[in-house]
Amino acid sequence: MNPTNKTIVIMGPTGSGKSKLSIDLTSRFFTNSEIINSDKIQLYNGLNITTNKITLQDQLGVTHHLLGSINSSSSVTPFEFRSLASRFISNITSRKKLPFIVGGSNSLIYALLSKKFNPNSNIFHDPKPDTISPNLQYNCCFIYVHVELPILNQYLKKRVDEMLDSGMLQELENFYESGAIDSVSRTGLRQAIGIPELEKYIKYTKCTDFDKDAAKTMYDDAIKEIKENTCQLAKRQVEKIQRLREIGWDLQKIDATEVFTASLNGERVGEIWERDVVEPSVKIVKRFLEE
Ligand code: ATP
Image (cartoon, rainbow, N blue to C red; front, top):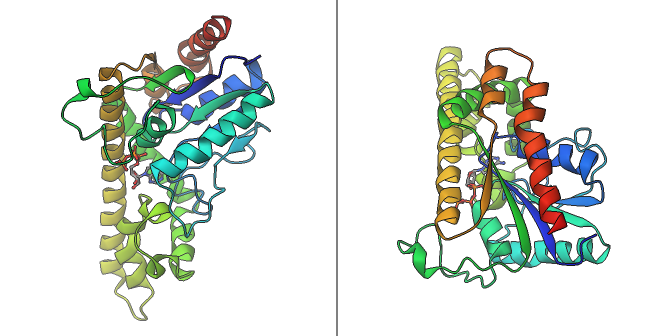
């Protein structure tokens, strides 16, 4: 099925639905596939709620690689990711299966896919994009899940509240208590949004006789900051995707904005998701596989 090093890449900012789309595609249409995670924080084990890892249940039996498989005390560079993920691509391809690269870290995606990767230069900061080669080491089909930022931001703020309802604070408290935070510098998993923002609150509430009102203010400030930082992350990710387009990567844009608008209005989204996101993506991948 995959004699020509074909690889599918699902890109997009945080919260845009990349994981859901990848499961819809691989569990229903391209069942001979495996997923390689390209979210730099989800590489590590731990903090599953805080980092928004897809649950085992939602994976629907599709094999995932580099998702929570790296020890949380280590830190993977883009260069190391290139080598790790390349090995998975070769292995998946050698078993005649189709690799899907799924995740929002564009620096990892660039490191993995570019033909010649120079770990000492950063294409996202280089002012001259025309000096960078768009050549790829695989035959890639890029799907970029787009959501208009004002709509995505509304959703992201709501998602933070949902993550808190699911136990994010408890997860972070346990993480602090385990000593993981003070032991090493803020690299790898320790860069996750939520860790620095909630640090002050978590430390303060560990004191005996803390002031409840002061703690509430700290908590509210931290949550506001998490929401702002998540929206900033999405904005930066979109800018990086734009950069990859500028250097010549052929990203096919799928607009999921209507799905998010409907969801924010409390409407059912299943049919819109199928119509606007799944169906066009299936067409793109099928066409690519037939080339
Ligand atoms: P950069 O060069 O800015 O690190 P990147 O493309 O390598 O960009 P991004 O995925 O944009 O990586 O992540 C940037 C930062 O956003 C991370 O260092 C982390 O602080 C935060 N972040 C990204 N993904 C997650 C996640 N799943 N959970 C929590 N925080 C995240």
